Amino acid sequence: MRFIIMHKTNADWEAGAIPSAELIARVGALIGELAAANVLLGAEGLRASAHGVRLRFSGGTRTVVKGPFKGSNELPAGFSLLRTSTLDEAIEWASRHAAALGDVEIDVRPVTEAWDIGLIPKPKDVATQRWMALRKATPDSEAAVSPSPKQQAELARLIDETTRTGVHLATERMRPSARGRRYKNSKDGIRVIDGPFAESKELIAGYVTVSAAALDDAGRWAERYLADVEAEEVDLLELQAPLDLHP
Image (cartoon, rainbow, N blue to C red; front, side):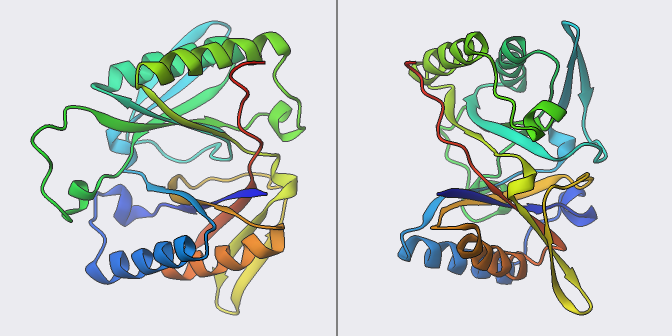
């Protein structure tokens, strides 16, 4: 089984703070341990929402809200990683995604690169940016209602086309939060809350994806992750199988 562990942002990260050397080393050690255990599938951090946009699609109309933005409905249903030359190109990809699905809300934010936090100089030949297009949960996604066959075929065509052009890098879809858990730091230690989650108001700051035999096994990594990234809260959700590009 595959799971995603997501930590939430705070005022410091939203203000553009750079992680300390100690935090970078600690998270790097955890990533190394996950890799050594052969369970690491992916890991990314996100830059502050001031660098992104929030897209709302309703009745065929798109509303673009420039960041920074406050958390509202931050429970995710899925995301795609993109590589484009501009934010506008990432917005257009997200708009095509929304055209296939209907009324959705999608946040587009840049992925943190090593040079963004001072680990290495930015390579001179880098002319593109990675973006996360994060799709928010809806009553249908929380009820495990799948897109129609027509919608799935349209999404598969979009992903297939843009994978071939190098724009689309990856897509993940979360199962309903009823199958997940939330881990919160408290004065009495880690508090574990079983899903479903009525709401999630905090913006996502980063994540790791892991393979595990069961939710409990992934939960042990979630508790480590909570401590090592110094987060107040992390969500653990099960991932669906990758979208079939050739149904």
